[in-house]
Image (tube, rainbow over all chains, first blue to last red; front, side, top):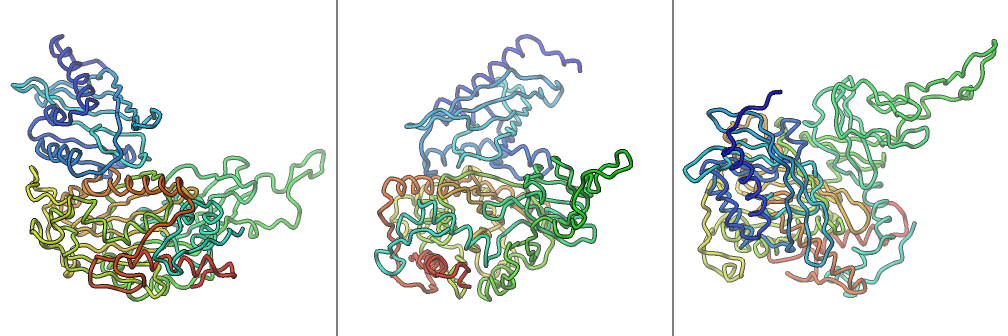
Length: 161
Length: 421
């Protein structure tokens, strides 16, 4: 497979987008999360089983930046949960295609969870399937699917992956 | 195995000893008496195994079983333990187009209905004109099938039991609960939307109790109370079967945003508004009748959810006294429009291990178990709405929890090892 060409500035911006996203969702400043997406974005957190078997159900399925802000409100105001830190480790994006609808790329991720009185554990591992578009505000995710191998969720997922 | 009897400090079930959640010997006895004898357990939907040669691996209690559809279309459920050396031979979680099940260890093979059909080298090998080895002459494959479970289906839902003397499924559910079962599973073909799985570090009964507890949803779940989906002043009814083991919590949505006794609670947020209101794009379906939510607990293994347009089964799979796996199967109906399917999927954001509403429940259960383990000689209090067990037309009561433990005590405290049913 030949890798589609991307100029260096765009590549650098794409890598920066991935790194900034990971830093943002691990920072505890949840308001940052929706700003990485377009207004009409799609975000899904989906078990690999459903993805591979063609089942539409996702653990979380949002299709607007507004619905991501609703999730942020939920995390901060309405969802009771045992607080934890999370830490994303994200691999370099592999470019799959570059076209009028944006850059399609994928990357592997691992998220570690650390509860306040506990040890750090592997929380959720998988891969992102992304479509990234150029906007006046820089590169944004028009689509981000987090397809996770960790189908048996350790109780619950509260914060954004 | 028999567990030490435990003391119920109030005499009735309004005080629940923490030992019922922390004692491993009691847990083993619960498995025997509730999951393996005298009861039906949920194993799946017919829509998961629609065609001959389809199978699904699941569990009854802590035992791995296989649900299989044979060539003649009949459903079978058998234990995932090879009749030869006991290997748990099936590792795939599902499959289709299967002709037989083969244990990889010595290649004993079984039909789709679990009968032993092939034993390699059964008649030995011929060497120097002599037959050497092989199974004894009186070995009969008919005696060595996989352990069969009794199977019952209704409305596309499949139950199984290790106990072949178990009462018919309809009698097991009883007429009151059967009516709510039939409301949801009224014969329409189900379509599978997908799964969510979570491991909750708490005793399995806590999930039954969670859905027999109409007190918490309007308090813990801000979404429910603020948008009127579930609040204490909604029109409601709590129903049980004659044994008090199964229950239905029935609620009719109303009062969204209204001020009343329930809006005094701290989780009520009168200013809360959704930026994307499609999460609550609720469309009434004819089959609902008046209620907008019916949550049915079938003891011991499953919960059937209808919360407005979101419908699912939630399978309780115990793993020791302190953990269970909770498997959500969301479905729809074959006559759903694409818009209705999209609506069910969007409302699914409220439920499951990350749901706006349900993620709370797993967290509350985990931290309850922490409290029990810290103080195993203590007891929980369940006397909201009185100390007895009765059906009600309101939600400000823990009667269904008391009812479940009333049944629990009958079965667990009986001398006979069988169920009281």
